[in-house]
Length: 209
Image (tube, rainbow, N blue to C red):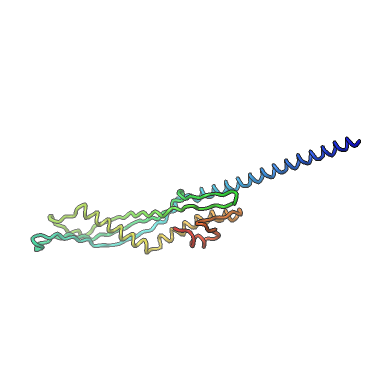
């Protein structure tokens, strides 16, 4: 009788160990599945954000180009000049396909490693009016190159003084905020430059654009 009781106890203990082991494995599997599910969601959101963010602007300016060639000890000169009207379309773009990041599943942390610098493209339409030149001092390819270089330099200064780059950065932050919203909703952290990003304000202060 005692042997039977012992067998029953041993059998019950064995069944209990098997059930607990099964529950543990099932719990572990669910935990791993949950982490994998979260990681896939985050990766998909980053892919959705990973696009070309483009901000466009238009600039205009009018310049007068002059050049003078002198001969005979500066006693004779031949001048050429033109009124130059410039209309330029400018784009400031961030290619977020180039953004680098790291996903730490164990600590539930996304770290932004690198944000691409802005790419500024200037496409000027240059028109010449009131062109005056002579056979001894005609317009040449060198003149047009000088004008084009000067136009782009002036436009670059205007872009720096305008709100175009700021608007582009605001659009960039708006896209990055989508990652922040997702990480916050899932209990993850978003970091950059060793700091935790908790709001759009942190993006403005901490992201080195």
